[in-house]
Length: 190
Length: 190
DNA sequence: ACCTGAACACCGTTCAAGT
DNA sequence: ACCTGAACACCGTTCAAGT
Image (cartoon, rainbow over all chains, first blue to last red; front, side):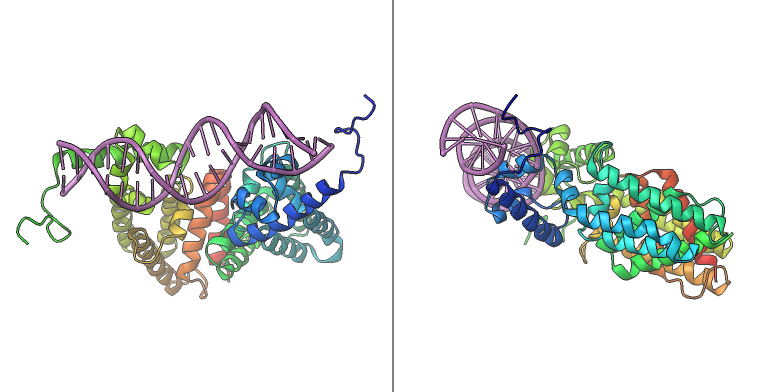
């Protein structure tokens, strides 16, 4: 129990491990942007110049890899989203949030599918939960101000965001924007 | 040029070929319902009791197989949709069409992705075109009657239908229905 | 005319052996 | 502590050989 560097340790990682991790992240980002978030992990490892086992060592599942890639971006998005209610009117805040998340969720095509399929307990699932919580808070504010109808729920925002992100990737960004616009109008009506 | 049974011929197929085709269709339907339309074709062939080459002989691509599976269903759906404008008021006709197509497009999960990715010239692409044409006609009728706002296009119906089908498969049917309801309300508003 | 199944290419995932 | 790469399982797709 002396030289243990396991989960409790949090010592500095070995220099080569750190470098491999960075290379994997950089190449994964590039490959996922090209081929979508379902792209070949072997190709990622090959491009990063490491063996496939090294990739699995750092990121046991595809979800872990994607979650690591989105970590900083998610934190920024969430921080921004949490301040949104104070910055703008309730209706405008909700709309800004929806449009920002749609754009974010179409960073890699297929990302909406991954988010929706995230297992409970995974990092990506926690991110989903935070995203839903922010949506819920903004909806509550908009509802209280009468900016959206009374029966709109947080899930409706989550649904819209993911459906629009899927549309953006498979059909076209313009069609996705139109869907968002009309659906937000539907949220207001009543 | 005498005994030719090629593309121009249209003679009766051999009895075993006909039976294999039926078996493949039956098993593909079952497997796609279980695992989605991206399921393993080898599993389909195995369950149908034929070699993998036989499957490819009958259906050169996954799209061809899916298109064959949906043929009858599509024809019925399209015939029904074309009569819809005469049967109901313009607004109700459009809503009925959207809800029916969403339900249809979620027969196999992943079907929306296939439809959206259909290559020009493929049978599935033609089906998409017919679907869009019907949506366009119903939108035109609704627009003329003032049942939807003036800037709603046929593509908006196509987008909504596919986004909702994707939602139905990945999230939940209820969330998909809510998305449809709110978006249709958005179509009306203006 | 149709069927078979081996062949090839590619991928996901694990793990014993190295350093 | 981390890396390597062979090993295994599985799939998509083609095509020469059979009937």
